[in-house]
Length: 369
Image 1: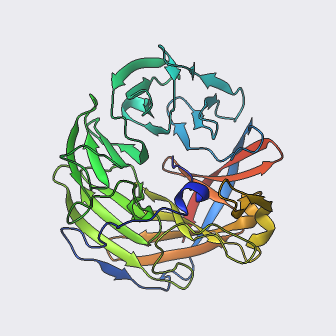
Image 2 (image 1 turned 90 degrees about the vertical axis):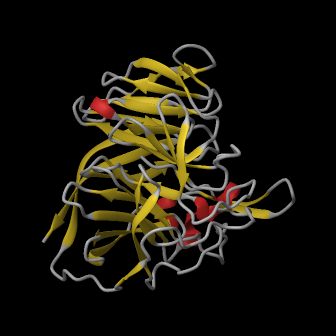
């Protein structure tokens, strides 16, 4: 359900950052060691979703959603085309087409689940929100913000929570926004004071988990900070900070990897499960990250850059389960794989590509005590 990290566009952003302290509860520090020494995370492969990417394109998808009632996967691919797969990962078909008219998309950058197994697609270039029915057909199109969100989730009452840069006079400077289905911003929050900066710095980026009851957990992408918010009031209810050897305490931007500089560690996704545990997926540099880089290239400014050629060689992944009530890590497990993120309440997606072929492996995940 999450957007991927783009090194080229984020690596050189500069400017003020949102304060690390927000209104509400103060942070609690998460102890470093896992408390359940016999616990482990088990992954069982369910299916593989395959597609093709354009030459020289990044094949990582923007979003992967599993419609539980329909037994279908819908993927917003890196080429900004929507693909629907059956429960076995077969029969890929496209939803809509590129364009400005009815049943068309200009720049669909976010796809996420909503009420009654429907899906929502945010298309900021067209300033509209499209509702997809359980069968994948387009059932409604509504006016929406032109802001491009980093992440978005549906709230239980049908409203939408966005992590986005909004330049409206009354809402600029905050990373989180509650938006009604007709595109009106109802509330902005996420910082103790607004931060007026034209280009959002990397520390603005949040990963959002689907709301359970009246609160939503968010994770900062470049800091291991988890925050629980009340969208109805904008109050921060809880905050947890994890400091560990494998996750740097301070990162101001996405460093662009080179053969001598590793890629940044970042939080790829957050999930609150039905038993109120928080699952965290983070990308950490592989010990031989340089083997995942392509040949040197020169950008328009003449600088030498290295485009990732194999994310499974560039990154490993850390999966952790945290009990937010006690603020402890139950289990911390490293995977020799590139985890894209969580898909629904019980599934996890890993990503790989070979040539122009893209493979998304879906796994059923379990906590074994």
